[in-house]
Amino acid sequence: MAFTGKATYSAGNALPELAEDVSDIISIVSPYETPLLDHLGDAPRAASSTYHEWLEDELQPNKDTVDEAAPGVLTTFGVAHEARFRVGDQVRPGGSTELMLVTGVDAEDHEITVVRGYGGSTVVALANAQVLHILGNAALEGDDAPDARFTSRQRRGNWTQIFSSAVRVSGTDLAVRKLSVSDELDYQKQERLRELLRDLEATVLGGSAPAASPEGSGTVRRTMRGILPTVVTNVFTPGTGGFPNATDLAEEQLDMAIRLVCKNASSRIDTIVVNGYQKRQINSFNTAGAETPPYRELVSVYESDFGICRIVLCRAMPPDAVLLLDSSRVSVLPLAGRSFQYKPLASTGDYEAGELIGEYTVELRNEIAHGLIRGLGGAVKAATPGDQA
Image (cartoon, rainbow, N blue to C red):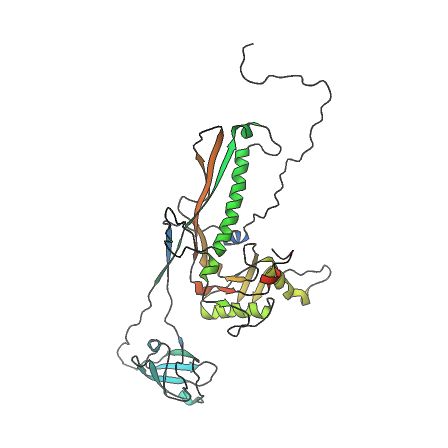
């Protein structure tokens, strides 16, 4: 018979042969779940440029603050933004039942003139930095139209970031028979994809763009700005600005943070993202009312006066932080045609090579619609074994 180079059937060893008893399941212990990405879901559209932009707008503000050292019961006093007031506005000082009627606005001296105790209300001394609520304007019958006021739409944006991982399997490794793996190349693709998704979630949360040349170059890597560095308006720290001072997260703190975010913006917080330590703190809110038997101490949904929030346990969250999101304003977008994919590479030897690659960015619209609590007790306690998650 001519030599073909292929194996032929053989009767094998005459002695009995024992087959190995090995399960065909490969267990992976490393964390690779992406709870935040799963919660947000796929984006409704793709980015079309390495710098993805969106537009944001806001209405004319209806409150301001007193800017006068000792305003007391003065009828003319300074304000932080006089352009927010018009003659005919009714104004109520924060924490007071007094009403005032604006009769003059001085743009040069940044002052307004008002009628104190308007409508028979009781005059109360004002204080510097006190909030002034503008209730509405009363126009004169038959009067000309007031001067037009406009708000300017703002362009916001974020850079895309490339995530990649190489795959290389030798010809021998592809040829030999393995336990539990029918195709080593496919198996390596799956493993690297799990790693890239894990890294994408961590970057969506905490990534930051470079201070210079954010567009990237041959020497500067282009990186996206994550959610945590973007949220800067509603950042609450225990013991500062009137925020309750508690070593560990308390229900009073969580409820107050949600309330203040909703007060500052037309937002509905529906997602609370926490690390394992802060998740256990939220679970403890329910201790007093837990049912037995069986004993339950698990909180997956937090319902406050300002909405129902799903609690997402995420390993990538810092242990001292609680992130409050309006998920309708958050999207993780791939660059068009650049979602995670496998790209075969040329081989110059006895191996198969390729690259898993994807390019993504995060769109966080209206950062004032989200909130962040930082400086909680978990930062120290997470240094002990068992508190890392």
